[in-house]
Amino acid sequence: MPPPTGAFLDIAARYGKVDPTDIEAVQRWFSTVLPTLPPATIEEVLEELLKHDGASDDKSLAPVYPKDAPLPTLSSSPPAPLPWFASTWREMLVELAGRKRSS
Amino acid sequence: MDLRRWKGVRFVRRAPTRSGEPVSLRVAHMTLPHVLWWHSHVQPIIDRDPDRADRGWNWLLYVPFATVAGGVQARQPAGYTVGIRAEEAGHFIPCALVQLLGRYPALNAPKQKGAFVWFMSTAPDEALLTIKDHPLSEDRLPKRLGSIALDTAVTHSFNKRHLGRTALYADEAGGEVLLDWYESRGMTALPADQRLPRSPRRWIKPSDGRYCYYTVAAAAEASRSLDPLR
Image (cartoon, rainbow over all chains, first blue to last red):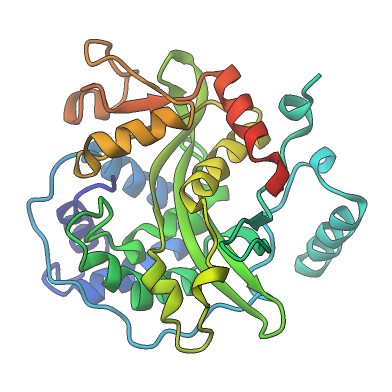
């Protein structure tokens, strides 16, 4: 089970100065801002969340669902990479080509 | 001889359906578009079901720990989306999400590391039958999604050279049914009087008989049982 929502609200307020009563702002901070922060900060946030891992939820906000988010595409969802020896030759070549493109 | 410990394992690539014709799947790294679609279309349906253990979950809060995997070395979090490959339309339809901590003390061998399934969720049938842009018919729904999601974590453990060691907590909301299901998949429940390895969980959510783990042998057996779907 995920850490309680309250832990996420507190962290967004502390690290991102986000209003903890605004669930959409908290969602935005976690989904788009946090991944851009330095790895050490992300690690700190993760460890902080793990300190609350398994605790029951004390603060919950009514969920806000994004409206009509489009279906993801196959082209933007490549297969998760495999270890070399578990892959076929074709998969190895696709993986190599992908690495070249992104370098 | 089973080489999966050394070679690694392929992820599942198909699921059985009621029609008898398997449906093609892909396991991808979890990304924000997957989670946005899930929170827009699947989570509202889950949230209406009082019996679901994943009711009220908010994947938009959890997704960063799937996308920053490389940068977070201590726990090595990883997130996977199991999705239907709809080749003609070019759609990838998420039907299960798995978030795990890739480097966690193994419950039965604390000096060894394994994967800890932080949380995972499968799409209810209703969510897959009501996709506006891509309606699926009932006889084309993927079956065994729970086993496939769990196998994704076990496969991750094999591929990171943790020999398949995988653990999780069977949420109380799932009751005995959920615990029995994990045991039916070959997992062992940690006895309530056995302490968890050193981690914040030991104090916040101590061992209560609902922590489950795969031994190395049980992980290999569970993994082999899904080989026909790889």
